[in-house]
Image (cartoon, rainbow, N blue to C red):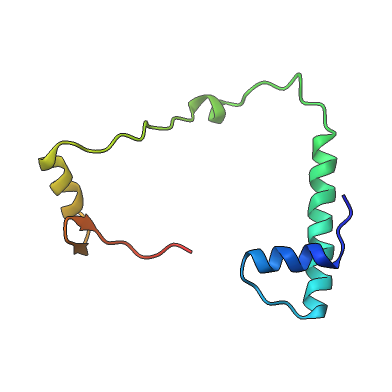
Length: 93
């Protein structure tokens, strides 16, 4: 896929960035390099490659709400800032 000026501008708008024309050209080239690299990676035959230990060891806990009130209060109490019955944390942007 070849990118044009509109692609870089659209991507920038999606992440709420304002680009000058020079920045748009720079990011268009960088995005094109990234897409070319991904295309190159997709051409690699990995059928004979097995999972690594990290993939087999990955564990995602089920997303189950805490229903034990004592445990809930203990968890919220572990945070330095609380608001109501909730732990307050900094925004992650």
